[in-house]
Length: 187
Image (spheres, rainbow, N blue to C red):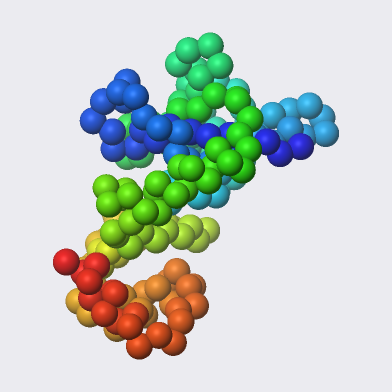
């Protein structure tokens, strides 16, 4: 059984206790043995690469990072990732089921509002077995599981196109205006 849930994003928040909207979708999965998990394939650079047991307090390894769920209040969980030996909060959520209309409102805002982090920037992420890739506008980051992260500034729309197609495996349209759009997010 899969149930849609909604989370309040805390990643990079100045104050984790400040009110935040429910703007991120994740799933609760109930297996046939009665165990509950969360699954999330859309949190960008730190997206889960394995389901997590819906159990507060225990560290859970995935193929990439170690995560844990902390129960802040009764029934309110915070997902945290171990990043360079520090626990970082990603988002908080409860188990209230969400329907399609719940997601439509926040999705419209995230796609259209001028202050949305998704409306005016290029954000791309992808996990490989031995690394994670992330791109913010023309800044490409490579985070190997072992070793130091690398950052590269892509200098042209052609470089960005190549990264999107080869690293992120995105099939780009044959649109003559695409290079202009890519140049626009380069800053």
